[in-house]
Image 1 (cartoon, rainbow, N blue to C red):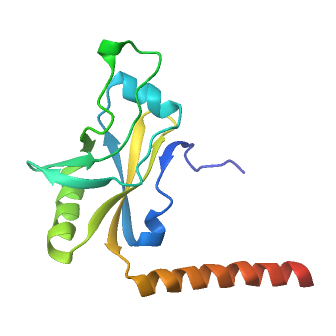
Image 2: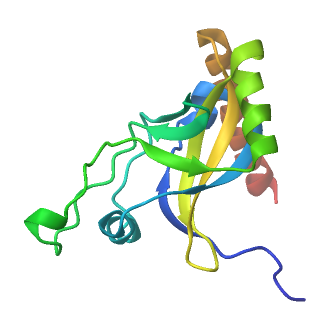
Image 3: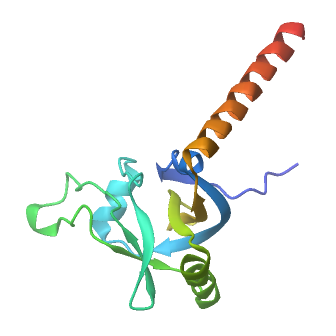
Length: 157
């Protein structure tokens, strides 16, 4: 049986997003990058932990995403490490995400940056609602129980 799942090469991942937010939906978006940013992303040293997506002039931008400078590029060809980067989404998706932000108090959280099977850089954006402290404790308790349950099943097994 052939594997139909698309091949992804992870460049950066926000593992804390599922702990801090309830993820309602995810959207794949393209990202406009400079050449040195793409090369630096391929090395896998980027960070999207503190970043978020927001609207500016009717367009969607990834704000506060850290992509380090590319070492092999010269001094004059470097990029800014934390500049806002434009996200490319369909108009219908953009309107849906902006409505969710304005009406329902949601946040756009980048989940991961990866390269698809064609070599294009993509960002997975989660439409999320923030968790309160009690919700985080509940999530942690459920995760611990799943781990203990798996351990017990292995011991009996």
